[in-house]
Image 1 (cartoon, rainbow, N blue to C red):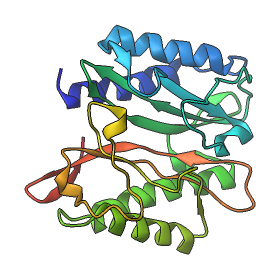
Image 2 (image 1 turned 180 degrees about the horizontal axis):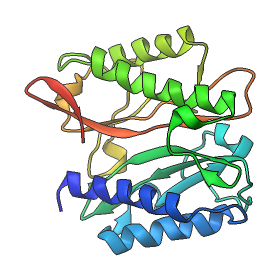
Image 3 (image 1 turned 30 degrees about the horizontal axis):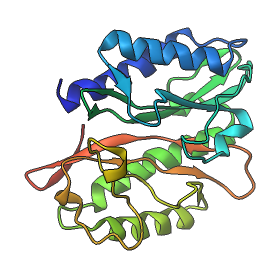
Image 4 (image 1 turned 90 degrees about the vertical axis):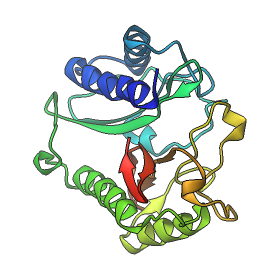
Length: 229
């Protein structure tokens, strides 16, 4: 299985879960549905602490915690709710890594950001889109992980947001062993193009907000130009 295929398993699982999430479901049930779907689509396991779906809802979306300590909450999905799902399928040590924040209003999934009525949630998702656009504009083959760390964290602050990540980083390389990952963090002088693939996954909020937002893609360079996997 190729990286594109395993990443598509994660993307297709998000599409699937968005079709069946309804108020009244709890996060434990949603996690199981996501993990079962990824296995059905071709994943053979989950690379991140054996957690296939890292899920939070409501005001827990601001939580940033290692998978080593993570336990899925039994919170119930409400008629108006925000859910963050981060998926980590793998097949023979080939990783996928994909996260999205899902908005529910009046019992329905809101597919288009422009249609979100909750202004706070709308601004959070708009900011995630802006960050990924800024990544594509700024990152070059010779950009270092540290350069990207400082640029994107400054950009987050300039836009009135904060980085929620418990280690302060914004993504990592895609490898075959978790301990071999390198991060978008200060002190990392490796060039982005020194790795085959890397994630960009800003976990953000505002100082006064009870809600967090995450959007994660895998990126790679083709002919010196950054592309989404």
